Length: 68
Image (cartoon, rainbow, N blue to C red; front, side, top):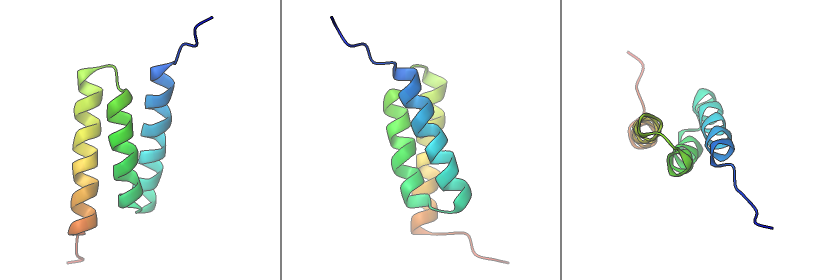
């Protein structure tokens, strides 16, 4: 009997973790989770969103916003 992987549940798990890390300001961990979510996404729009969020998190790790 073959084991089937529910790819959508992996996408949801990683994207939810990424959003939690992002909200808490842990952009390094959020970037990793967004990258993982992108790998498991099944739709082009999901992939694009995950990549955009991962890039944003990378930018925040390298150059965080400064208070004005």
